[in-house]
Image 1 (cartoon, one colour):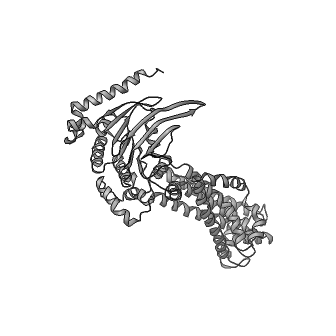
Image 2 (tube, rainbow over the protein chains, first blue to last red):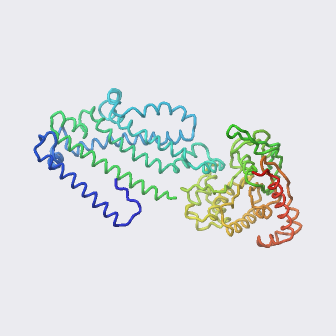
Image 3 (cartoon, chains in turn cyan, red):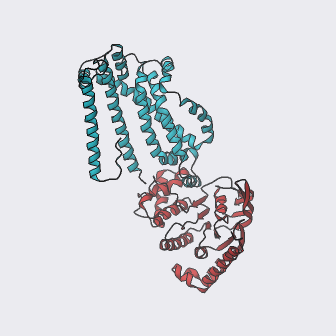
Amino acid sequence: MAEVTPGSRRSGRRLAVLSIAGMVGFFAFWQLLALSGWFPERYLPGPAKVVETMFALSIDKYSGATLWGHLTASIGRFGIGFLLAAAIGIPLGLLMGWYRWLDDIVSPFFETLRFVAPIAWVPFAGLWFGTGIGGPTLIIFSGAFPPCLINAYRGAKFVDKRLLEAARTLGASGPRIVAEVLLPASLPSILAGLRVSAGIGWQSLVGAELIVVGSGVGYMMVQGQLNVDTPIVMAGMVAIGLVGVVIDFTLRSAEGRIKKHWGR
Amino acid sequence: MSRITFEKVNRSFVRGGESFQALADVDLVVEDREFVAIVGPSGCGKTTLMRMVAGLEFPSTGSVRVDNVEITEPGPDRAVVFQAFALFPWKSVEENIGFGLKCKGMGAVERAPIVKRFVELMGLASYESAYPHQLSGGMQQRVAIARSYALEPGVLLMDEPFGALDAQTRVVMQEELIRISRLNPRTVLFITHAVDEAVYLADRVVVMSRRPGRIKEIIDVRSVRQRENWDSLEHIEEVMDTASFVHLRTHIWRLLREQHEAAPAH
């Protein structure tokens, strides 16, 4: 979480030094704790053991696939659920921001359902959509959908009223106002929502993969847990964290580029 | 033909449980291709009158019509130029000017020559692909005026369009507006609190009184303009220097001052 606000290059360098020092300290402490012999290795695998496991996993299959195989399966499911959430949530949020009647119809359901944690959908997701693609996708979708909708809706509600009046006096229809005024005006809010949405969607993944039979990082971790193979579980956690960082970084740079292009 | 009719227009608001009257019995007819400016102190309801013609607000009682059709919603036959420009920041100059035409269902090929004509008319050539934030206030307002004119509206509504500009830009824009409205005569309702501007631009100046807003006097500028041949003078300061201009301006200032002094002291 290094938010570097306008400051000197020196303070930037100091932040980098502090970050690195913190990381080194953390891993050293963890390794020492693991080496101390106070806990059996199963309780707390050390970082060296985790890295070793990750290397081994990337070559040898565990529960049917290598770490890459599991990751690819997971990222695929995440991608489908996330894109579906964006494709439905953003237009719906914008439309609700313009058409009052739609807001009145959707809001009661949405406001209630968004408090149901994605993991609570696990039994029904499996029943309704199966344990292949459909079930996990629904769970990721249920986590990723609310931020897409809420941010598009809020963005649409906070559009400069003068721009809406200008569009109306120029003869713009409702759908055109949504597409050509609300959407671009809400873009910063929508992009921020997408980042939150991707985060929650990726987090929901392990829950989603608890019900999957054949593949995925979550599935690999469940298998590791069943075999009391804790380094596998820890390796899965690290992989999830790293991919999460990559997803966030990708969206953040896309956000920066889009904002620059649409600059005001 | 585009003739604006205000008939017994009243408008009252309820604020904090108390109702107060913003406009009282406004009767006014703006003839086809006439340029009418409304001046008055802030809070006299002059902007509300303009917004009623735009279809953005409605009278509590009475009627506002264009060519005898009651106004129920905004429409491209009544284009508005706002004080804050209200350009779309994510659209280029060309796209902003073409937006209303696009709403009419015109394709890109059809729009291009019209946009080009208004780009040239408003002196925006070579800025076509710039975005509003790259332009000065004066240039932005040129874009907004071009955007309204491009629709070839019967009625042009201007809400203190030069209020946000610096004094020099303002003068240039006033001269531009005179030039363009001679080339493309439209029915114009122009809201301002600048007396000079109203007298310089308008055929008639409507002076309004403060709360409740009502019409105090309507001054015919056109007959003076024609008699004194203001249009033969090239610059605004030459017009403003004529005795006839000064006389009208002073008359309007007196009207505004009277009501200011008549207003109850707070």
